[in-house]
Length: 279
Image (tube, rainbow, N blue to C red):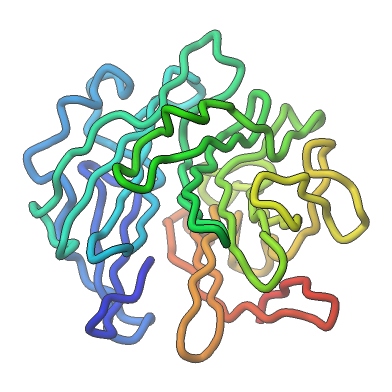
């Protein structure tokens, strides 16, 4: 989710063609079409022919909306992340900018769940990943939004050696002298049986190493829990942090008791030691 220059909110989400919603108040959202109303045939080699595209990451930079999104099938690492741009964010206004990074069954990691972060020096980075060997980061070229040709390293940010390696959905947020890596542990997409929970670590470098509140590296399974299932909120995860006029927001998805998918928006506070907590 981003706040547009006119003060309204624009949100994108997993759906056929990538769903778009808008809001004036962060509470009432209305459907505003899809990114690709005519389909995205360049993605079908990764989706098995499905139009369903996952985990879009939206930001507004240099007068354009940048949308990174995933094409895959459930449980497969034959995956790809693509980039699209638009000057308005409206349905049908998007231009396909092509493939950013892809993985195969032999890659050992998974090119889904992208997130763009710009560091304190103005460098662009893309974190991504799901299961296998965990969360990765690559350098981007700010001029194109695509992968850097001068720095092609794939860096590891987080990995679990338990729970079948269940870590995914990274989001890197810069605040003060730290970069905070938010991730999801455990299992999504099982309705009210989902066990997703939101974890965090931090580093003074955008590329890590990230450690949790106890000092455990996230590459060694570390992570401090800030939001988990409670009451009729099941599997809150795939977090994003968005600064707004009344403070920072944590934006995520969860499931209701009936298994329906919901949007969660909470205020995110920061304690005296600089660690986030959810209001």
